[in-house]
Amino acid sequence: MAIIVQKYGGTSVGDAERIRRVAARVVETYQTGNQVAVIVSAMGGETDGLVALARELGGAEPLAREYDVLLSTGEQKTIALLAMAIDQLGVPARSFTGIQAGIRTDGDHQRARILEIDSGRIQGVLDAGIVAVIAGFQGHDDDGNITTLGRGGSDTTAVAVAAAIGADVCEIYTDVDGIFTTDPRVVPNARKLERISYDEMIELASLGARVLQTRSARFAMRYKVPLHVRSSFHSETGTWVVSEEEVMERLVVSGVTYNRDEAKIRVPGVKDHPGVAARVFTPLSEAGIVVDMIIQNVSHDGTTDLTFSVAREGYERAMAIAQSAADEIGAAPVEGDTDIAKVSIVGLGMKDHAGVAAKMFQVLADEGINIQLISTSEIKVSVVIAERYTELAVRALHAAFVDDGAAEPTPEV
Ligand code: ADP
Ligand code: ASP
Ligand code: MG
Image (tube, rainbow, N blue to C red; front, side, top):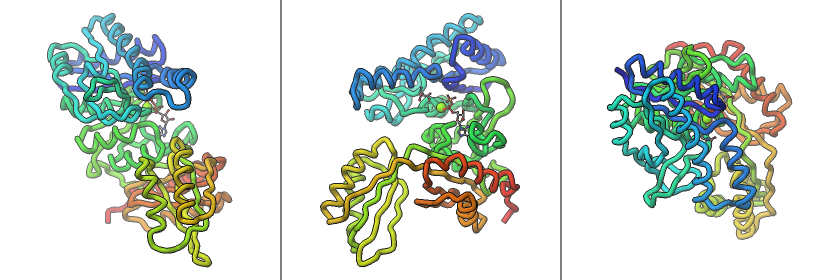
């Protein structure tokens, strides 16, 4: 007997017929003699609809506590419906909201972190031969308030529950066949990967591949939860997310991603002497604004430009803070640009290969795409470009690094 966690995303539970199909798969897994805990998302489009309603009635910044009470209803609907559908197939099932499942988080509404799972109740239900159907994306803080985990958070619920109950596998059922070399909706000939390392998956997710929430991949790595990302529409093997040692082929580039959720801020005319960068970035970090990429130009006449990127969500606030810092240090008026996208390539094999970044820049140059910001790590290179070139850049990079065989396994070094 194995302990299996299955997570079904919004499209997979999008209507009654699909919920019925999910129920059938859960029952099949249960009847082969396994304990099954199921995590579900809200039905496709439901969370977006709730967000729109909150904006309509709650203003530009709806009350954080009530926002989470509202958003959590999407998942609450799905757990009840799926438990009913499983019961109709003759297998006992019980639904649990985040609070009922013992998912304790911090109190940071809309982006709460799971601190601990008191899995006693879920464990008891599983031991009694009942399927546990748990609402993804939600938990409770120490004051008993409902919290939500950020968009895509059901993935993190699934991995955290899997870690808490010692599951043998956490299966993420979604609307694509696994993890691809890039978003298959942008590049139709993207290739499905058999395996990918936790590190690569964390990079891909944080750089925009929304197929998994970044925190879920981090959790999986920390607690060594084997993840299997696969289609909810058929039963073929998907992609295994595993430790680096278990990845057979160390691809130079295993994925190309894009992210349109950033904005760029430029502080021109900054006096080039010690301490000015700190005076710009300290107030930003004190306000909880995460700065992603930074570039400082060569100085002319003793002044320089500081350019950086932030999440588009906090852009207006970041602009205001940067402006007041600029005023204090006597810089010129700040300039903002939301018309940008970040495009990245990720691969373990980059560790053993020189010239990957240079090749990336050449590929973009050949398409006439200007690079505005650059950042690199051991296994990724990211560039910021004008948003209108996003798809062109993703296709060109995929063609150059994946289709052209550069994704061949790196020879042992
Ligand atoms: P779910 O509702 O099941 O959580 P999501 O919409 O959150 O599904 O994530 C699945 C989507 O992620 C796919 O439909 C696909 O368009 C997108 N995606 C982006 N990058 C990738 C990638 N590298 N591999 C697979 N899917 C990707
Ligand atoms: N329903 C939430 C969302 O749409 C959580 C999830 O689907 O993972 O973001
Ligand atoms: Mg998702």
